[in-house]
Image (cartoon, rainbow, N blue to C red; front, side, top):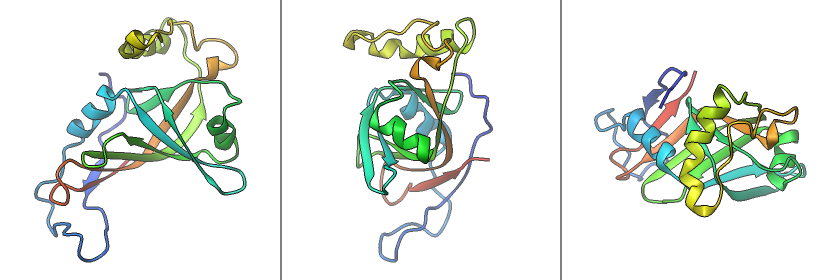
Amino acid sequence: MTDITPAPSSDRPVFPEGYGIPDTTDGLLPWSDVEARLVAATAYWLATTRPDGRPHVVPRWGVWLDGRFWYDGAPTTRHAVNLTTNPACALHLESGTETVIVEGESQPARAAADGLGARLSAAFVKYKDQGYSPGPDSWAGEDGGGLRVLTPHRALAWFSFPGDATRFRFR
């Protein structure tokens, strides 16, 4: 895994009184443990906001690479249309008890076949058994092949709530 972004800072998330969030930083999760789950996951839930303010959530296939979430699909899908109006979004892994939530912005992207495209293609190999294996040139065209990238602003994670509940802030 090549990470071109600096590690985020970490602290405790703010929860209402009574949730048992520790007062100290003892037991905070290391970003490397959270990022490993983002890399290994095969199902991600993406939340966006429709132009009229209503929420929209969709399962997505994608890859965590270089400190960002890369995924593709037709620019006419509901989530892509939503992101055109408002790029703010949230990404959640499937588990509600071993939780990873990433908040950030999603933008259209392109990837040259001989650079990022090759690395993305190699990372997408995790979907080969499901019949999806894009080649390195899949995202090199003028429209980027529907490629999008979610750049994180912050994340919340816990694997043993509330003791390890951790908030990450990206620069």
